[in-house]
Image (cartoon, rainbow, N blue to C red; front, side):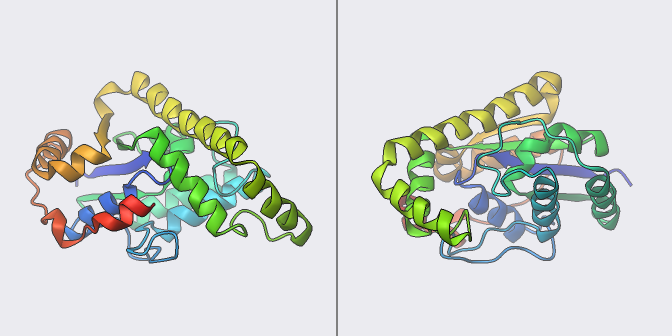
Length: 238
């Protein structure tokens, strides 16, 4: 069976949860055990725990930040254990004619996944940099425990986050460019396997996005109305 396999890449806080929710609600398989609602995403993250845990554990084994926001490299390779697990995850989805996943850290591993899935298609969600950076900073201020459980480090972070907003905006801006530079580098290698979708254009013109996806996948898929799952107030607050 010929499969259509895709991943949703791009920066954190770029509307990829909404996009994944839309695909999931349209009957496209993006996982069985999905990361549900949380304070940072009340409608749900729609991230397959298999991929989420794989990326986090691989970053941990590399002694890197597991959030993926402070990783300096944007072309990571899987450790041997992770590579075996990735192959098993792919094997478990062999019966789905079309399937994919959404997990922002995937952006750091695009070439590693392409090596394992030669036909992999990459959908890159793009949201305005200023909006993304501000959203990340708001989440950081609201959940200061998010990046560390160490009590001493936590106290330092509490002070630093509140007193140096410019510093954190700069850090997140650098991360934003690191993620999209990774997407651009991948696109140069595989120009026919990358589709960019701007989040605002997707929201404003769902039908155009449907046409782009069907052309990209070479399919004739049907999709649900976006207003059945979309709450504009949640995205504006993010």
